[in-house]
Image 1 (cartoon, one colour):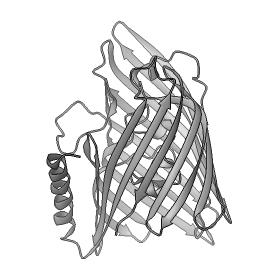
Image 2 (tube, one colour; image 1 turned 90 degrees about the vertical axis):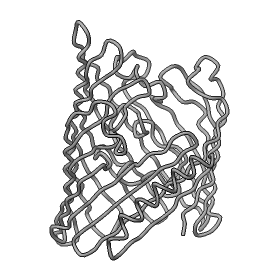
Image 3 (tube, helix red, strand yellow; image 1 turned 180 degrees about the horizontal axis):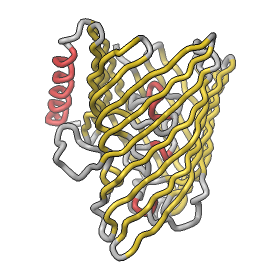
Image 4 (cartoon, one colour; image 1 turned 120 degrees about the vertical axis):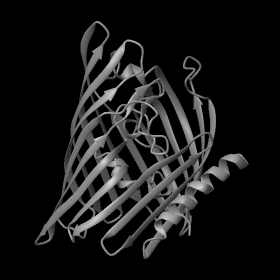
Length: 351
């Protein structure tokens, strides 16, 4: 990371800190990480690097003063910097909040459970369907309403997101840039998410979600995509075992030059983790969908989309704030072929 990039990151962090300083209670975390990827069988796919090293830093701040709330997140990678989230909120009641700003979409389980600090997740990689710039929107800019109710030991929660979604360009889905909001074209959409916890003091949760987005396109021959997505998710924990996953069906109505076309696909993943000691955790994940091996006019625009595969890995806790990980995916079914990858990661949380 160059000095110029570092200075920009510090400026962004200072801006968030100044904003949050107006609130009485401020909490911040810094998530540095270094990832190393070694891929094989990528000779026929120029969009993938054989060897890749990616350092990054994620800065996360929350604050509140009475009913007023603030949340900010800045991500700096080796070649990109983003204001990932910036939200101003108001606590309507003990069970209800309303936010305005750029926030995570409510599709699936992963992106609402883990943000960009990889230290918080056991694995190195994300399921491909949840990754940035991939076929489903990751961020919405607008209104987010959170609510819920408890009954006996159980709890029902819901989230409603109304706002501007992404634009489709040559790099994938590009969310609205909060720093430069006039870049690109962004149209409104809606996300709805509901979850049920049998015991609100435990991590077991089951839920469903629905999304409708209008996605303008600058891809030659494609004017706009109307995307409908619906799915389910769940997570189960028992002693040292943790299993979670999600499944989604997506219908894309493509407004193409001279014709219209539908391009549907589905995707699902399940990840299982087992803590074998206080410092070692083993995990495996399987991903797949009904689009494997077939041409899809929508997915063809995502050159880094992995359609399926199985992987395994291990995480070692160096101390209370640092972890080392290794991960092996012997066969990844990519949009342009198959490859294998072994990954290494050091990640931490400060302070």
